[in-house]
Length: 255
Image (cartoon, rainbow, N blue to C red; front, side):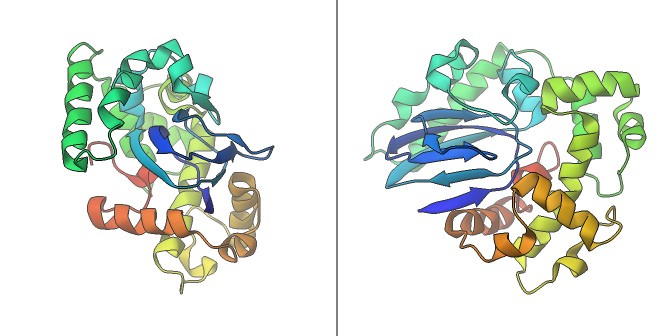
């Protein structure tokens, strides 16, 4: 089964079975590790998978800052074997809890939560500037770096450093990604809507959006919609029903 995932925050996946192949952005498809960490992305992820059982843990910017002792920028648009990277040693230690195919999924989810809570007990304190910056980024009314810095309560220079460290990218690119994904998410939830009717308020016109689409997804809107998206479509609708937003990147912090 093949699909294409839109840009997202970081995630860690534990897989049993055939994890298949994948590529973040253009390039050759490569074998996917059974314990794969994908950093925050500003390119689409193409992937193919066989029969596989998978657990996924998404990391919003605050979560990255508390669980990973390395700048998010170091892993931006990258997928790595998490078992081979010391920065993720404490997180991949939970993998043995997830290997039994006969185990009850709810029991395994509880085990994941306990492991993460134990790590949090020894982790750094929350950085309120990250929370404020993330909340502002998720606000459709915020469209400029100056507005984002003001809402975060930091200077634009400090925002640049904070953004790269916790979010993985400079603030201007994050704002561009956010407006693109708000538009994409609206159409994915209602494919009867035209792109022009779903455009985010920060787009001047559809050609403006089309340039962003090609930049982030590597193909045109029409070409994307002509492809089947069996995994992503199901994930978008499931996330919307369970969490109130079609994509991880559109969640408000704390939601």
